[in-house]
Structures are given as C-alpha cells and as structure tokens.
Image (cartoon, rainbow, N blue to C red; front, top):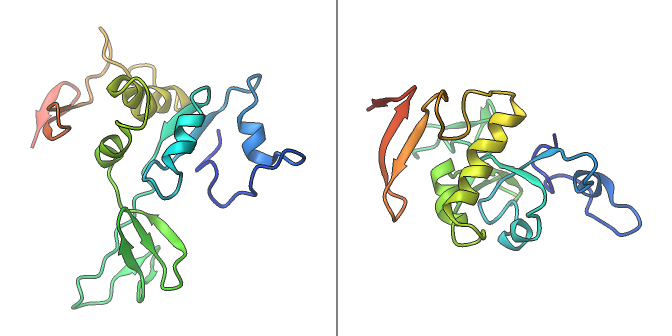
Amino acid sequence: MFTHLFNAMPPFHHRAPGPIGAAAQDSLRPTVTLIPDGVHVHPAVLRMSPTLRRCFVTDRVAVADDGSTPGTLFGRPSEGVYRDGPVARLADGTLAGSTITMLDAARIMIGELEGGMLSVQVVTSFHAANALRLRDRGRIDARRRADLILVDRRLNLQAVLIGGREID
C-alpha cells in the first residue's frame, strides 16, 4: 500500500521513478491512497491513473480556530493556520491537510472520473475494504454489511445507514 501517493514524495522521473514508479508496477498491484481534493492531487493525475488500485482518502483535518480561542492542529497551537478552499495551510503556505469529507471528494471528482458514481464507489469503498481485508463490506451485495450513504442525483446526503439501520 502507498499512502498519499505523490504527496511528500520525490517526483517521478524517467531515470529515477521512485515510489511513484513502484506504485505503478502491474506486477505489484498495490493499493494507493490519493487525496482527491483538487490540491493534493490534481484531477488530471487521477484521470491518468485508471490502472492503479486507487483508494480515496480525505486527510481531513479540523482547523479548530473560531477566532475567540486558540485552536490546535496535530496537537499544537494552530496560530497562523488557515483554510484555503478545500485544504488547510500553515502560516508559510505549506499544506497541512485537506478539509473535505469523503462526500465532498465524490462531489469534486464525479465530473473528473470516467464511469461516474460507479468509479467513485470503487475508489471510496471497494478498494478500501479490500485493502483492509474486510470481506463483509465495500459493495452492495447479499450477505454484506450495509454501511451506506444515500444521496440524491446532485449528491446531497439523504440518509446514513450503519449495518442496514438508518442513523441520525
């Protein structure tokens, strides 16, 4: 498994492919996690990698600062940390994490991936369940655990089910 492919890794080079080149080896077929917020990984890169066993993750961080009390980020004071669209940045502009939910990722990427919602389901659920060896989830099928979200055509959340039961 490759965590947060492309982020904090040496860039791919044709003479020194590094971890990105290793992740693309067909013989290995590793699961690669990608942060699809449009900043950590550009949508064009996601479209270039359909043969990878992609698993979306959010890398979501809470930028805990309402202006009245100092917040924290990674257990440290978050002075100077700011939200920049779908990401959080340190005072110097360095990425500190994403601020999107998995549903936000689906909304961002649905127009970017061929196959639409089926592709999103595969990269948000199926590959994650397989990587974790959770055989009872990751797809809708008989004898599978029904951990699902229901959305409308515009990807607005309608319901959340855990083990087949709707929760509030």
